[in-house]
Image 1 (spheres, rainbow, N blue to C red):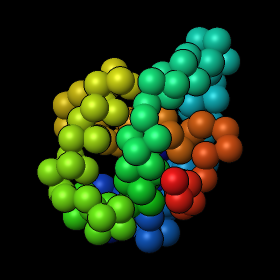
Image 2: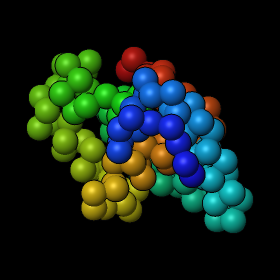
Image 3: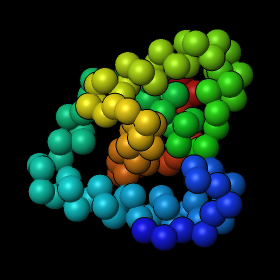
Length: 117
């Protein structure tokens, strides 16, 4: 999917961000239709904090910015992300993008809104 962005990693303030979200949701909806909503099963294993960290990552925040927003150290944020990646079955350099895409694609999940729990 070609996107107009100044970065090799798309950020929430890039003009192409909304298109990226729309495309990810459409892509994941197709997969969910084929897999019987395996995404929902994957999300069940995420802790509320892991989901919160992933939602902030979906807004394009860095680990430092996520830590500041949640009063966590960068190392703790990294650990929450690592645990979430394991639970979602993603790994490697693209793990963050893959995990964020799954959270963004979930119905009712707004990447710009974080549950304040």
